Amino acid sequence: MGVPKPLTDDEITAALTKLPGWERTGDEITRTYPIRYHAAVAAIVTIADRSRRIQHHADLDLAHRIDAIVSAHQSLPLG
Image (cartoon, rainbow, N blue to C red; front, side, top):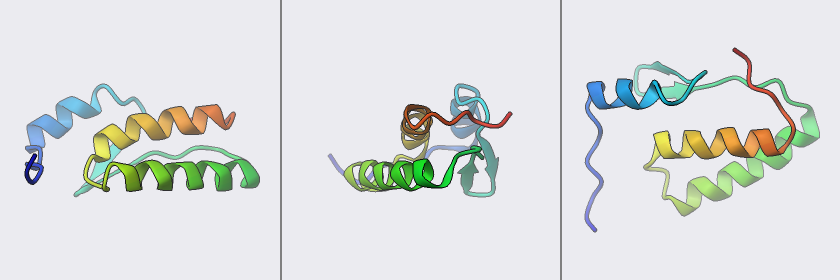
């Protein structure tokens, strides 16, 4: 399968249009969620497991999964 090729700036910008609420600052993408402590802990454990499974290289794919995981833990994204 080989080493993943990094996306270009234009590819990242285009992909982020499909991820409402996610913002790019430098090489990072972020999103803020209002979430209660215990739900956050459960979500973080699930996110860490998914991240490990995809080997931390697919940030944009992981963003889709994070939205679904946080939603499953009954939290609504800000903005």
